[in-house]
Length: 89
Image (tube, rainbow, N blue to C red; front, side):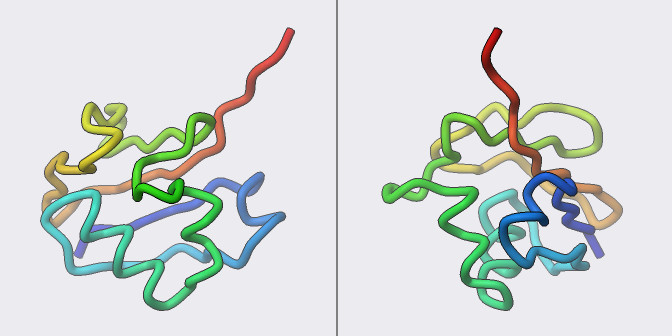
């Protein structure tokens, strides 16, 4: 089963423990996590269901391309990492 991991900087703000999910896309993987941990949704997705500006998701070390539809494929052995991007100077 694919594994979804949230970085520690997100875990400081909301309960989002690592979770194995049954999913074929990033959207379905995240939906399964949010069903169990609903508060995590607003930290990751905006009101339109798109990734927030300062959130980045990687699947098997590659940044997702579809930040709106989250249609990037997730394989049975994939690792999905959700992290908050840092900005500033």
